[in-house]
Length: 145
Length: 145
DNA sequence: GACGATAGTACGAGACTCTGACTTAATGGT
DNA sequence: ACCATTAAGTCAGAGTCTCGTACTATCGTC
Image 1 (cartoon, rainbow over the protein chains, first blue to last red):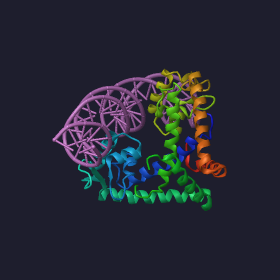
Image 2: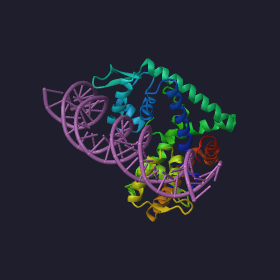
Image 3: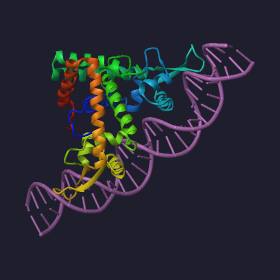
Image 4: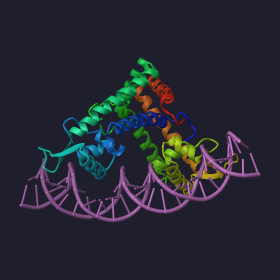
């Protein structure tokens, strides 16, 4: 795995890690210091109308148990709540709570900041190109979309 | 953090995860089933002439203790060895052992396969463009290169 | 109503990561 | 040379993350 300084996996990981670092650093600075990366990776997949645990697990690439464990903590910290799913008595929907929405708002701002910096580095046209390529690539790689 | 289906962090994470999944699946299938992702992320940073633990920790974004823990396991499994650093009596160099080199060879092949698939999806020109953009972006994001 | 599939939970084990404290060796100033 | 400071690495402990196995409750179909 080493050697090749241009390993595509590493090339993707480096900026991913950078943006995640920034988001969590600034989230913590803004008082959202009780959320972890693992929690964030699940939280991130919650849809606008809430999501089922199984769906979050599938999209996040973890087991139901792990997703449940993380959602328990998100719930205890006030970022999400669980409500019954009206369409299925077995299921519950994980929905974003006010504190969660506030964290989302902050995160969106940080991501926008990072994007601006990257755009400054790459140039507007190439930055747009990067986003477009990654979006396209998602179709070929996100089996859990 | 959720909502925005075009969140740049997620767009980077999805293909990263996909390629990592593939590498570890095929590594396991090829008999390298005693290496974990965390170990791989450190292993990946070992330079051609070996690397110091502290350097691996820094580049991988983990503490020295964590890197040491992971290298202990890589060493026990025969992927790396530790040799004294001739230039510093305190340090040792983590170098790739034969079994590690074999795993590297296999990984390189898998990554090449994935790249071919992505190129088929994106087209040759755009795939090249993606690699080039990520390489450029690395300069702005990999503080530990 | 009975049956296989699905949503979710409970429990326990293993893997990962960190903080704090420590040992040993190198470096720089005197 | 000597001492203070810095750097490389280890040790011990706790907290977090993840999974496999096993379970209950509900759904959908017959």
